[in-house]
Image (tube, rainbow, N blue to C red; front, top):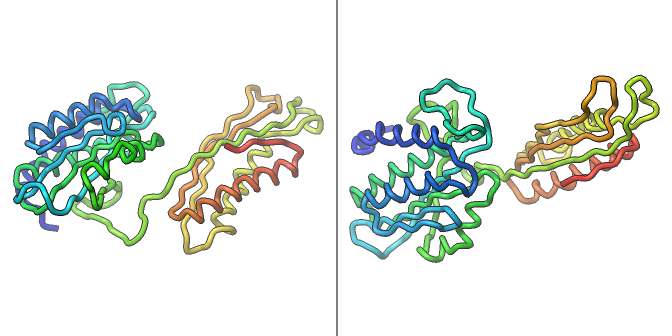
Length: 293
C-alpha cells in the first residue's frame, strides 16, 4: 500500500503521542488528562471548531474542506479509555498508573485520529467537513451512546461515521475490511450459585456449587455448537470462577462470570435465553439454586 509521504512524516510524532497515552492510562469517563491533550492538539492543528464535554468527557473537532463549511459531513471516531488491568511488561513507556493499562489499543486509536486530524487540518484536500470524534468509556461505559444523546450526530449533521481498530497479528501496512458487522456486541453475565456447604469427606450432606459451576461452564459451550446457526457467530466465555476458602470444605456458594459476543440481535437474544435455561436446568439436576444477571 502506498502511503502519502506527508502522512509518513507524522509517524514519529504519532508514535510519541501513543507512548505518552500508554504511560498515562485513564478508564471509562475519567479520561480528563487524555481529553485535555486531545483538545489542545486539535486547537493547535487549526481545527475550525473544538468542543469538549460531549458525553461527559468526549472531545469533538470540526475541520472544513477546501470550500469551507457546507456539503457532506463525515465523522471519524476513536476511543480514549484504557482497561482496569495491571501492566506486566518492561516497556520504557509502560503504564505509570497501578491497575490501569491500555491493553486494547485505544492509545493507538486516539493517536491515529490525532494524526489524521493534523493532516486534514493542514491540507484541506477534501470537500465538505470532517468531524473527528474522541469517545470516552468504550470499555463497558456506553460512551458512544452518551455522546449521541448529547447531540453529537444532530449538532454537526454527521451523515456517516468511520472508525478502525488495531488488530495484532496483521502485518504493518495492511488494512482488513469486510461487509456487515466486524466488531461484536459484548455482554457480561454473572451467575451466582447457591449450594449447601459440607465437609469434603461427606459430600452427600451438601450440594456442591463447584460441581454445578463446572457443569454450567461445559454446558454453556453448547450454545455455540448446538443452538446457534453455524453460519452466525456467537462466543460464550466463562472467564472467572470464584468459590471456596478451604481445601477440605465444600463451599456454600460459587460465582461464575463471563462474556457473550454476538454480531446479530437475534443471536444475542438466543444466547441470553439459552444461558438462563442452561443454568436453571443444571441447578435443578443437582439441587442447587442460581441467579443470573
